[in-house]
Image (tube, rainbow, N blue to C red; front, side, top):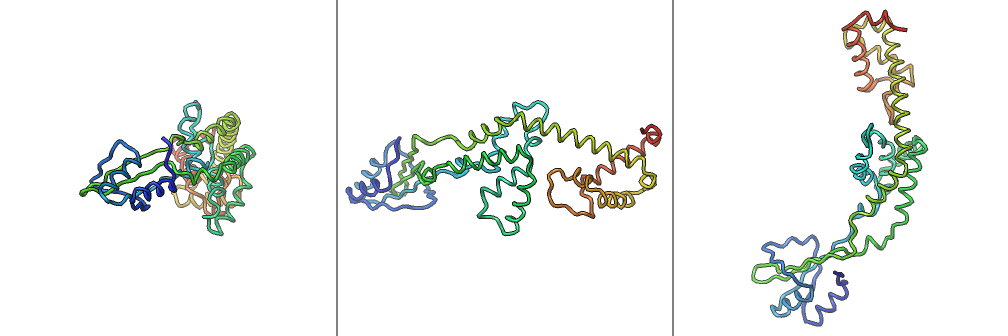
Length: 285
């Protein structure tokens, strides 16, 4: 059903001698919904010499603009196409953060804008391409769409009841932004999977390198309590950028002197392995 425009509604109300007032967030109690049109409701208002209250609904910008939440929601269907990875594995927090920052730039604090510019430089080529395509889609969204009503609720107070009519526009789209986000991700899915596989392989190689370093380090093997091992990890963390990168794959800001929880957990896992079988050091290459 085509929605009656506000100017038409007001004109029709005036012709019937009905006062029509716009209200916000209507939540009438004792509602009596009728299967009719706004014109039918105006007839009731005229007969009852009552007022007509109305409110238009407008599109949720999230239905038309791709942002980080849109991409994450699109992952639900895309995940069904993945066998070896979860959707969260192939789409990094860096990309989601960059997309949020670009779409909601006006809402960012000055320091957040500065961080955004730094984080944009950390995106890999495929992430940069996806970001650009999402922003290009957003730039082509007709601003008038967001100003076009998608629904109307109107009611007339009658004997303690709100006699109500709901109307929804025929042209309401399910969620065009979600569909567009899915298409963008699917177009680059093979590249994302390949990039993820490469990153995982590199991570495993780096973890193996660090494990070997620790097990060959007599100073580490002498760290018989967690405090000593944490201090040992601090030295390695401070002296080796590749270790910081290993446990901070998203490239976010981290302390240069204090290892994060991922690093500490890894160090403890290597120590647990050594404690269970101290002969493993004799089997090292």
